[in-house]
Amino acid sequence: MRNNPTEADIEAQARAMHDSGLVAHGYTYLNIDDFYYLNPATTVDSGGRWAIDPNRFPHGMAAVADYVHGLGEKFGMYLTPGIPVAAYQQNTHRSPAPAGTPATSCPTPAGTRPTTTSATARCTTSTTPRTRPPRRRS
Image (cartoon, rainbow, N blue to C red; front, side):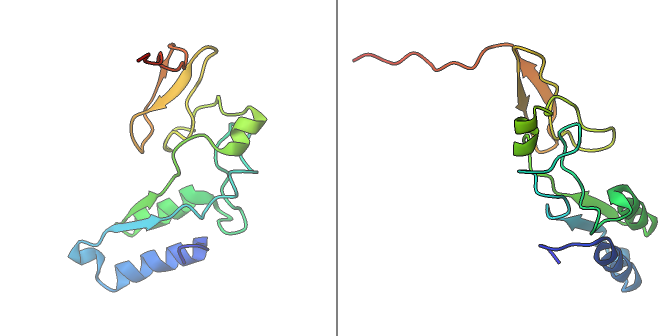
């Protein structure tokens, strides 16, 4: 399931965890790896964010999370940090992530560059241009 997750598989796994009693014993996290979105090298949304695969998740990730949460479980989604290649190539990497999702890209006003400090991608900008340090002369 890791390389080919589907909405039905994730919901079935959540239901099995609940019905088997695992949740009652403290196993409350259901995490999904990064195979739920389309190829970020070629496909992003208009804001430059990873695009969820609609064939595998026809109701979207919010619906899956709502289902998992409804069973008393927690739902985690792995997200590759950084700006998707397609966002950079399409120059769409300037839009922030929608509310309630991890920041996948940071606003980058002219003359600044994004800096992330953790996997949750708290964004700050630096106005210092990226330059090489001076070479030491011997």
